[in-house]
Length: 274
Image 1: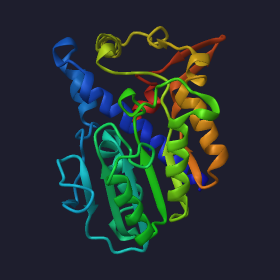
Image 2 (image 1 turned 180 degrees about the horizontal axis):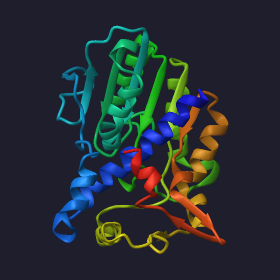
Image 3 (image 1 turned 90 degrees about the vertical axis):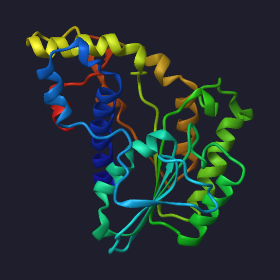
Image 4 (image 1 turned 30 degrees about the vertical axis):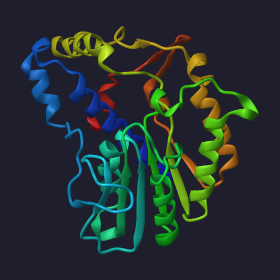
């Protein structure tokens, strides 16, 4: 189990770096050599290959969302991935860990913004729970970005918190049907289009061979650790024995000379893993 979590962590880092590169980089802002070197490692944003979309009780597929079933399985392990757009983008990493020769079945259930285990969605949540009850997968992976549309970012309300209740209700129900649940946790930065200028400046430093000591983003660790998402997940892992965190946050935080910074663009060692 520990080795699997380590593999998931570094696979997640590699995906995150490649995805941010592909979605944020403006080719007109940096030299072509830097772009070419990094695009060698980049994957398609929705790298769903080797399977088919299934039109069933989960709803009519609208690729990349819906019920996706990987094909040509010849092994014995059953895998289910559930989540929002991050699951559509990251499921190929889990497939790499569990290739066709190792799996009996491998199914992915996704929809925009929501992970139907944590965020109840009439019809879809019930269908997924029935699916899990029927096949009883060995492992369930919940891959998601916590976001305002799913109410993940709303203030934590303690014992009366309905978002936490939804998390626990869904996870404890899934726990009845699987050996282990691997839950992606929150990340310590928002590396979105608002940071495009920063990423282009970083690439420029790489191209010029300048030092990267001053290239990291400021980071408030207290704010991150006390966020509503972190407070809820802390309770989740205390109350859900089968839940295990996929946590890459430590690899993205640099601690030196008492300063805390997010390594949004990461170190050369981490980039090499892409």
